[in-house]
Length: 325
Ligand code: ASP
Image (cartoon, rainbow, N blue to C red; front, top):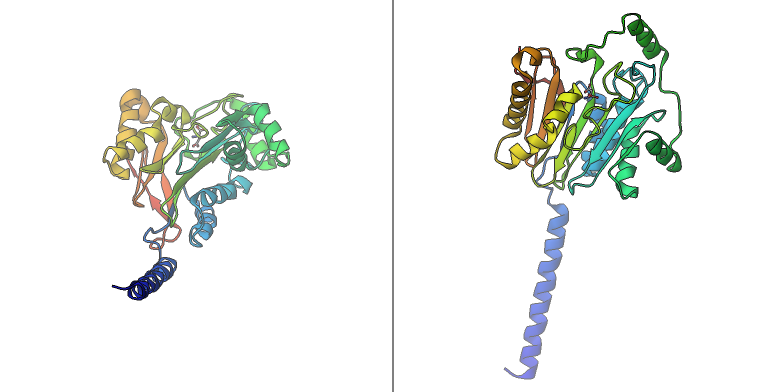
């Protein structure tokens, strides 16, 4: 082959490679992602799911979706277990807990925060702008102010009235009172296959001043492992902390359990630790989502429901299976 032939061959080959490269590029842009996005949240949280879905359905990031979803009940004064309008502790003070976690195990958390409506967004900034995972109380509030969050009164007239009514007997019965603890835990898988989760609450109504539950504790109220799945919890937080509930569920999924099997095993473990007698009165529920978009949910008693949004089931409320009926 003379010099000119080989030059011609080279030119042909490079034109061919350029064409292949451009085709691959066009194909990559036009081919829809194989991952179907999905978001699930604890309880009847259709508005929260809708906010998260707006982001997921536009090929947005699951981390943004869970944050925006969690902000919906945080801002709703009628939701008495999250954010603004949350029922106070026994001294009449609304104290909030929240956390957030992404697919790379980045996480942020705040606890015992007073006077800020959106603890989930403060938690996200703890994750993104500090060397820490968790800030509590005054320190968290100081950080929130430094990030431009505004301090406001979160105790609504209705919640104050309910607290004053409670004061008459001052009986703390956290064990089976679903109406008084409806934390939102929200898990999402985006079209890039990335998982994230968030959890936000005003905690158990009429708790002791300073009490923090599972919701801001990474591994108890929320856990995400981008390679495996995510889990979140609602109910009497002390119980989830005892078995590191959400982390337990993710580890069970890592070892081959489906999200449903993992939630059931965690609830059974919790019940066996507490004994049937006490467990009967406990209100605890887990919700899980794996990397393939499969969902599981299980609770102690039969009051738990969750909300799912995916291309096949848009903002549907589903009754969870439970150990006791
Ligand atoms: N888990 C929350 C807590 O213990 C309460 C709830 O889910 O209702 O603070």
